[in-house]
Amino acid sequence: MGNDLRYGIIGAGSMGREHIQNLKIMGGVEIAAISDPYQPSQQAAAALAPSAKLFSDHRTLLEDSNLDAIIIATPNDTHAAVLKDALATNLAVFVEKPLATNVEDLKSILKWNENRSEITWVGLEYRFIPPVAEAIARANSGAVGKVQQVSIREHREPFYSKIDNWNRFAERTGGTLVEKCCHYFNLMDLIIGQQPIRVFASGSQSVNHLDEVYGSKSAN
Image (cartoon, rainbow, N blue to C red; front, side):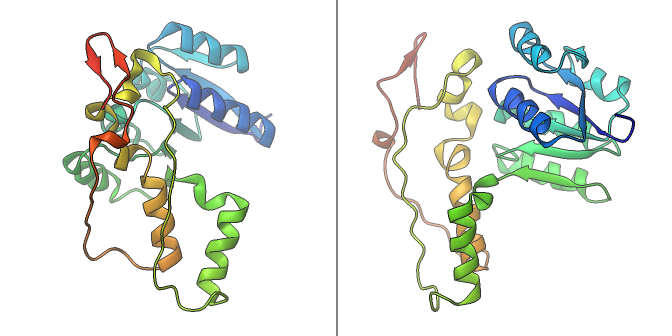
C-alpha cells in the first residue's frame, strides 16, 4: 500500500460512502481519513474503511492527515466554506456538484482556485454514462449532422432522504435547476460545444413535490 493514493473523504453521508465504495473497487487507493460532524454517518463510513482516521471537522482532517487527494461530499450550501480551506492545500480536490449555490460563492471559489496547479474537479458524471458519452461523441463528430437544438427531459421523483432533509429546500440546494439540472446544462455545453449566450427559464413551483412537509416547512 506504500504507493497507493491516500484519499480523505469530507462528508460521510450517502454520497461520501458511495465514493468510498467506488474507490475500493478501483484499487490502488487508501481511504486514509474521513470527516463528518454527524456521528452516525461518520461511523457508517468507518465501517467501510476501518483503517481511516476519523474527524468531526474537515479543517482538522486537512491539518492532520498526510493525503494526496480529497473528496468533498457535503451538503450543497457548505461547499464554499469547505473549499475555502481545501483549495488552500496542495491536494487534488474533487467536489460534488453543484460547485456553489449562489453566484457570490462561485466567484470566491474561482478566485481561491486561480493559482493552484493541483486538479480541482466538479462531479458532473453524467457525461461518462456510456450511452450519453456515445451521443456526445456522435454529435461532436458530425455523424448526426449539424446540431440545431438540444432538449433534455427528466421526470423528477422525490430526492433521497438526507440528514435534516436538507435537499428538500432551495435555500440549501440552490434550487432544482442548480441541484439537479446542472447535469443537463453540462451535457448541453458538451454536445453543442459552446457556452450559452442568453438564458431563459419558464415553469412554476408545481413541478416540485410541494406536498412534502418536514417539520413545519413545505419542500420547495
